[in-house]
Length: 84
Image (tube, rainbow, N blue to C red; front, side, top):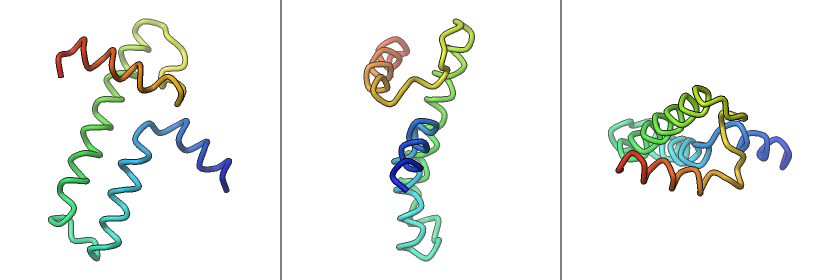
């Protein structure tokens, strides 16, 4: 089971945000209004990493999704570059 979680984290840079959204859904009986913050955070995460993937793909950088151990640095670089 731990290996499965590691694989999911490797392939999904927004795994934590996704899990927080699902936890909120379960806690609030799938009342989307009560989970708006988690949903918006998850959407922002997905949009950000999609932009990173596309940029890395255009530049020929593989893998398109950086490894887990490099993500914090990659995130800092992209956020400073795009002024967010």
